[in-house]
View (cartoon, helix red, strand yellow):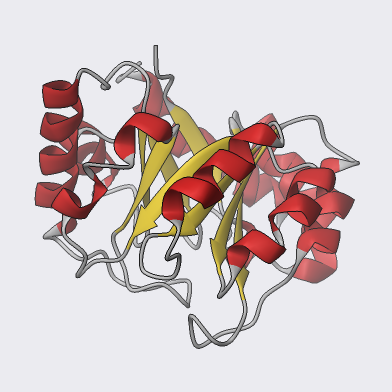
Length: 227
């Protein structure tokens, strides 16, 4: 059975205070952490690599979900697994041999996810869904935090849920959603069929650990209603 998860994205966190802010999200009830890895090529931004993931994973015992917005992800997957990534997702748009890449992630012991951008249709996933552990539906164009939620993502989530039901995979493959999720729209995302909810700027809107903890609790309380 697929579990509901709240996964704060550290992309918008103050990295000077990253440790205390990560601990605050966990006190607030977060089910793990989302790592937005960007290379400045596939997306127009640079963030961090496996060493940062490893520095967090060594200090906190929680689920680490690494989203690779990079070209040639296969070359870097082993390092992300070695540094503590429990789940790794790669973009349908960047990987030619997607089945091989998904298989590699699973062989190395992590959950394997496939990501689709806002303009990519759900139907392209039909052949890979039986091999994936989760699908990440982007509800903003990847590259930057703090963007506005694209409303048509709700229809994509519903369509993906229906496809999973049609294939008999709805109890095994999770739907993750990332981008522009706030307190005013998180219930819409959950009602549409989301299982894993990624929240960035709405949680890390402050560099005060107590405020970050309280922000996390507010999202967690809503998600708990849909378990």
